[in-house]
Length: 316
Image: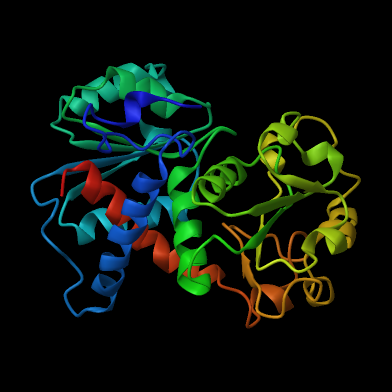
């Protein structure tokens, strides 16, 4: 989904709604800015004053642990005032519309909204209706996009592999329901990764997968052959309508990542997962906790990446 809502007339970032259509210079700017924030978490005083006096509202209409927590930590490290909205106990549960909820929060002098919603396009809708000084960050919308997860994954790859131009990257699992996979694919292709593979059963691939510029595999061993990065996906059971898989055990047998299957990749391949992991379904504990796993590093880098996004949106 391409949308000039995201950029100001002079090409600077105004909202972060999707990675689709964002130029490589913007993605690189975010990654470079995040590099400068990584060290903040290692200091005794873990804060900088870039968002001092700004109010950041985290509005999560779906459950989240990593994303909401890392956004909250990131905003606080930038010295912002942070409000976490308990949607279950809010006016939404009483029938108030999404835009009315946002309008009321904006009246409380909000400067930035971080939004997660089950409906694709929710963040775009909000961005079209907020005042010009308010910025919107999409923290995941339906099956559509999860831009900051895609960015933190790119940061992790760049950190461990040095760049993208000579890499083979495999994305494995429930691509059909994964907003993370879409953001990963857009980011990888934009940043110049020459070969992106998706590995999944046919029932868990989107119909337009051939238009995404990826190589499709239905056999895990073949798809993992000589790859540099293995990006596992969570089975999105809550988004599935009807039976698309025989069972979790059947999925693990054919597409779950084990140490034996990982040997098809390069010896120095890194293993990633956006979380939460279903151990024994998508990934074996021996791999998740093994020397090639960078899953916890992804979480740590997520704070710096989200600091970078909010800082750039605020004009710093």
